[in-house]
Image 1 (cartoon, rainbow, N blue to C red):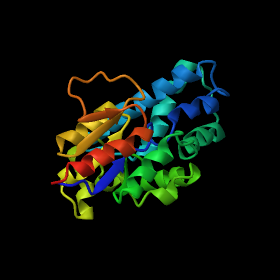
Image 2 (tube, rainbow, N blue to C red):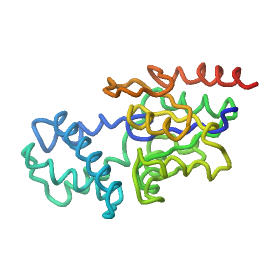
Image 3 (cartoon, rainbow, N blue to C red):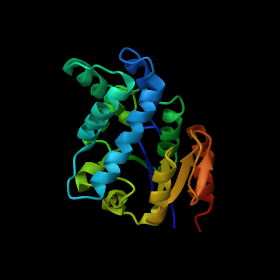
Length: 224
């Protein structure tokens, strides 16, 4: 079955979360460690919310994660500091290879979309700020189904575009995310921006998004 949709994760795949270190540096002597803890707690809270009846959107999850880790890193945050840190998630730079990946999908007539845990409005603002908004045809948010990746219902939103799971290629730099997409029947590509600790691997892997064009060409050749 031919690929018709290429779906991209947002944070850590198209947008560089590492840039938050520069914002955190004004508030803690350990900005790198603080960012790692913030991101880890953010994902933990999202997983907990997805597994319970007490859903909260990703903006709230991000805020709660920040307030929980702040004391550990000696962060004495005023309300304006908190707002600046949360707003920074909508003002991240694109990875240098992000545009190449999106352009590859468009050039080969695959429909490039984003599937993210982020609130849709935050995701759209982030894409616009990073200069990627015009390259993305649709933004699908976990908020629409009140759950989070890797829950099946989040990924299955893409079928609303009239495609079968096997017609979707999902691209993520988060190994657990690409693996979740594979389990619902998507073709999957893991961008190896960091080491994987999972036993079950995504279908394919690339070092960066500049390699996506060649991979998409392989999928084209595989169509009977």
